[in-house]
Length: 416
Image 1: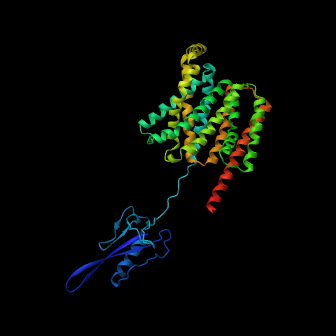
Image 2: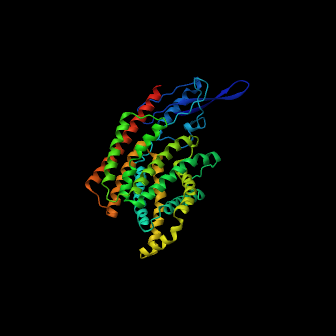
Image 3: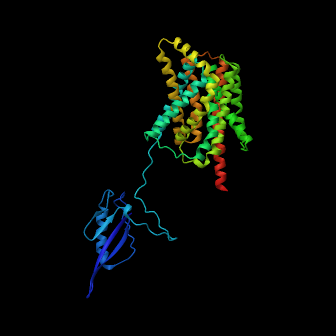
């Protein structure tokens, strides 16, 4: 909508003055044949000719003006950003009408890039983490180093102002203590599992995480429909079949993957309960502070558990490779890409729905399992492959079932 300012000179016997009139002027520029509507707030006989002239001049314009411009010294047509807000029926000011609503840009390319980085970084982490553990089988120290690299990374982003640093308060730190503790348990347990069994087997067992999520949430009072409970049955069956037929089966590796599931599930549940008052903190900053606190949890325990063996283990690792820099690069890459793939996952979660994220996470496990089998040439039995496929399928069905139940709950809340 355009505005029309009209200044009408009035001369009397004793004085001369001007009356300023404002008229809203509606012009449909997309259709030249359309007659422009011209509602008048106040009719004055002396302004008819001026308004007709303004209408004719305005309809000849092919594009919106970038700023107010003058048609002649008597009246001006203004851009809507300069219009005063009209009073609504309840006496409050209404927002000015806009000429056009810009179409949202497509995020397909951006999401594809985030997913691609997420998958690639996860594959690189799993490969070099396993290579480092094969040479230096001390998962407590390696897990601590990975958290240390992530902490340095976030501190650098905050110092260089590449990432806005959240406001730190005592309640925020206290709220993070629980999630960081469970994150520490999940991370070190996964590293222990990686050091004992094949990477593919650990990921198959970790695909059973939805089972623990449903069970623990049910104990805490959440309810799930029957289809959600049915969806976890193939997960249990598939993981059991894969475990029985796994060539590299190790009890410590199995328990490490299971405990890792428990840790990450409790982290997610506890985060929802303790961090409700800090929703303004984005996922990347939240993960950064969890990494820093987890480092303080883990490293002292790592010294107690493995510290006496690190020096001898280091000399054996250096002797096992031709070039010591190879070992250093593997350890460094495991630390850098551990943080990067988690960073990408949080960025993906900020951009997409939880269902899309769950499906993407399921497919990520498939890609990682296949990639590590090809790199390390792990023998896979047919029944083992079948069990892995059933477990992954169950994870996919679980994500579909939980998404449907959430949508139904939201619709019922709206109706009520």
